Length: 575
Image (cartoon, rainbow, N blue to C red; front, side):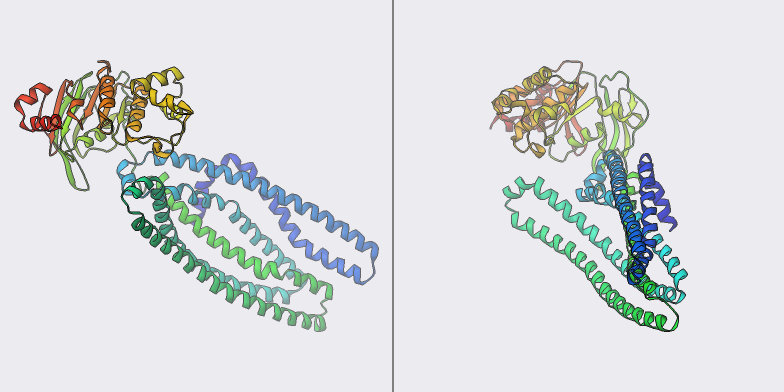
């Protein structure tokens, strides 16, 4: 109970500005409690007046009941409208904050977890938290209403009161047992649901590769196996629910039969009137069914709420997923000086960079070559602080990278990867994501520099063409050129090209090379080369081998003294 109250307070902070809606909902609920208690008594009196031919009293009582009905309809509208407002308010604020916090999670954590983990927590689990303040709150009001009904019954007849209390205790105990068992199965179901969500996401996003790899059958079998596990967990949970409901429903029927026997006894031997017996009988659903169901469902929703709370706040509280860490130092005038000093880094205990040291001066164009897996891309990931180094130091303009703010690093560095991610928006909107104030003329100029404008002008909707998720309607080369245009629009002081021209044909690659060569000396450029022709004009080229600098120099110098570089060059030129 303490845990639930503590969690409720934490979640309530997200809906605090909608407090008045919760107040209106409470007012409506109080009306509902009063109405549910007095209405059966009024209905009993109506029957008495009818049987005794008291027509004026009957008409008057019917008018009162009609008025109570109008109030009941009004309270329903009041509750529903304010419930929706409060629910939407909490959900919106929590999902916004989760979106921000998910982007704060370290890239290694993102890489090591399925997308379904985050999707489920941002959608279903947030809905479950908000639900506690609506349906859960309604269950609580229902319980309070039933307690009020018990008091009314006690005032009318103590024997019926004792019978109802015993019935409610027995039926509620069964509901509580059912709820606990269902909750255990629900945890398993949610885990399997996350896996299905992740695979479904990969089915859509990776559909092109699934088809080209000819693995449709294998992938669908994997997806089906996980769907089967998820559904089996759901069926197990539902079977528990069905079994206990069967017992509860039959017991309820037995209790109702015994209640009739009790009424016969009380009418014949204890002076209970038929009208009051009818009123007391009309309470049976509220105290024998609704009371136990509300307690059971409130417990179930409390369990779901606490489970969802742990899952959502594992992100918001930094308890489970490690967040990116940045310093407080700001670079007011970014120059573009980079220094690696004895840097060591690896993935899953596999060392990639081994005591690496090198430096890059402002305005230089630097190339990196080496075998796949030698650590080239890792260097770029560390410069942009996608990962945190294990030992050694990285300095940007003389500042230790770990002391700098996020904006000082990523606000000045543009990374163009080999497989850039593009968003399911128009070409223009993709470019405006990085600069909201960019003009149409600037967009066109950036695309011209990236050798993309001619292609865009051939499209039916030109710059307003929606490119699909991940830029699916574009070729690999077109996606890379759009990413390059995006970097030009950002106008940053350092541009990192991670094999960004690898998917381009020779002619387009030469055009992109011209664009890179034309970048002014005020910008530091670093290029991981798939083709040596991309870096022949660089001020310096580093050869990376086993996470260390094997050699460095200009293209001409390396051709003269490095057999490794010479072999690479001859292999490329012989094609």
